Amino acid sequence: MNKTPNQMSKTTRRRSRGSVLVEALCGFFIFIPLAFAIADMATITIAAQANEEFAEQLARLCATVQTQDNAKAACRDVIRQYQLASNIKSVNLDRLVFDVALKKVSLTTSMVVTLPIAIPGHVTHTVTASVTQPVVSFPADQ
Image (cartoon, rainbow, N blue to C red; front, side, top):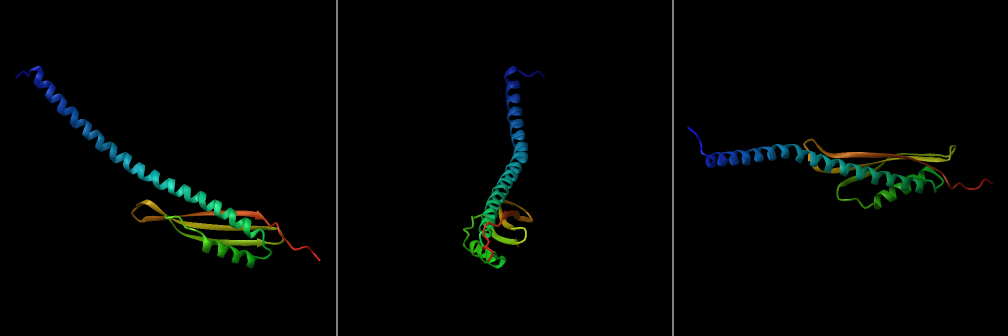
């Protein structure tokens, strides 16, 4: 049975529309998870940068005091007053070394970040930053 040109064009159009739908669905299965992963990675990168800047500021503050106890107290006060962003669960001072002999202060901070599009079993991510600053204030020797 021979089809007329009019009948063939209707069939071709239907197949064309169906193939566009299949291609779009396949594309969504690839691009939507990719977009979600990009959003999570952007959040982690921004939080890591914020943590690095925060650690630098804490280290500079600690470099202006004379003892490790004063440095820890100053860090605790700053962390307590720190305004957390909506996606940051907590900020912690993991390590503080106030080395009088080498005249430097080293510290490590961590931030626990809530991911915007949580992967099952991976709702949060922890970013850390380690910083060293020279101690700038010592009492004069008498």
